[in-house]
Amino acid sequence: MILLKRVLIAVAFLGVLTFSCCVGDKSGIPASQSTAPAATQNAPKSYSFESPKANQTFSPGAKLDIKVKHSGNEAPADSIVFYIDGIKSSAIVGSETATSANSEFMSPGIRRLKMTAFFGGGKTESLSIPLRFVSDILPKPYTYQVVGSFPHDTRAYTQGFEYNNGFFLEGTGQYGESSLRKTLPGTGDIIKFRNLSSDLFGEGITLLNGKIYQLTYRSQVGFIYDAESFEQLQKFFYQNREGWGLCNNGSELIMSDGTHMLYFIDPQYFSVNRKIEVYDNVSEVDSLNELEFINGTIYANRYMTDEIVMIDPATGKVIGRADMRGLLKPEDRHSRIDVLNGIAWDREQKRLFVTGKYWPKIYRVELVEK
Ligand SMILES: [Ca+2]
Image 1 (cartoon, rainbow, N blue to C red):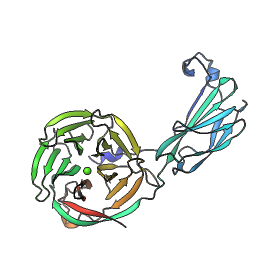
Image 2 (image 1 turned 90 degrees about the vertical axis):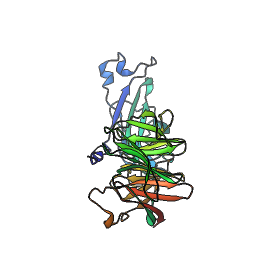
Image 3 (image 1 turned 180 degrees about the vertical axis):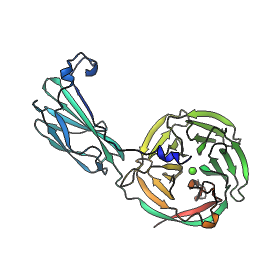
Image 4 (image 1 turned 45 degrees about the vertical axis):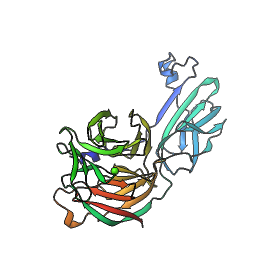
């Protein structure tokens, strides 16, 4: 059933070409709502992009060569202004058809290049195409060294994992099996435990200012507990179709939802302060799952992989990727064993712990640049 997650995360880069044509109207009433003759609204499109092409891929910083084509019987526009994601980036006048724009300020993701042509008499015409910006950074490759191991409950379908003050905090998933728990690293003993209602599938957790936040998979609801007593303090709601991983940067919750997006959320009002699109130098990096914020970098498991990616929270660029293959030894596999998921950071002693769903062990690892 969990495999259904894969189905819902595909992000297709289908070109959506939008076009609008309107007659200048100081009344502020959109042309579609005005009484302008139908012939005006269906006027031939005067301009199209020759370059770039819709969905063309760029690295931030690349010079965007823009070329437009004028067609039809109408006189050329007096001027054309170009915008990237709403920011004025270039302009041409008269019969010019080519210019360039700087994309240095672009962070990775799908951005829209829009042209607005201004004609004599106040008529304007706008056209926009999506462009795809990937990262300009080659992620550093990492491998790992196992420094130690600790017992892990093989009934724990790990969805959230943190370390705090001598204990692991763990949120588990599956309907009827979901829980929040606090365990002792040395023995695996469960010190505190709380079940979720059997109609909820627990997901990521994070500890912030004495409160534990826990997401659920498809119920679009999260829970806040007192970190000491596990008493439920509050519920919160989110728009993402699915909740996956959770961590925090000390002031905001950072949430994944199975896509390549990460959301920075106000922990009091649950508004989305901002979001980033996670890209490496080739494409978007999706299936972002359990998260950890370590020294200003977001570490993320990628669902169904043995990979942990390191993400710059300012830009979404993947700056490193750790190949964790071989961490779980054949003798530790059992019939219900599932994927690597769970990254916890001990800030005081600078120790990194990783585990997986139903894994019998938690590993303390050090990541080593290849
Ligand atoms: Ca974590």
